[in-house]
Image (tube, rainbow, N blue to C red; front, side, top):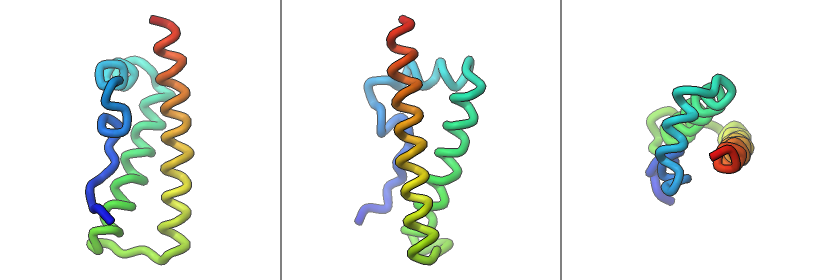
Length: 83
């Protein structure tokens, strides 16, 4: 298992400029990105054994991270259609 965090720019490398624009302009995207960062950081800290979590809590956060990624992907797709 890698202990590298899953940053949004790494998850969507072709959309870094669009991610930046949405972070500046879209309040809903900002909330999603902030929550994703928070969840992702917690998962990373647990995987690095800085702040270990129980298995259930960790799996729940991983599911939430995937849901947030799906929501971010949908917003990116919609934003690409607008361009």
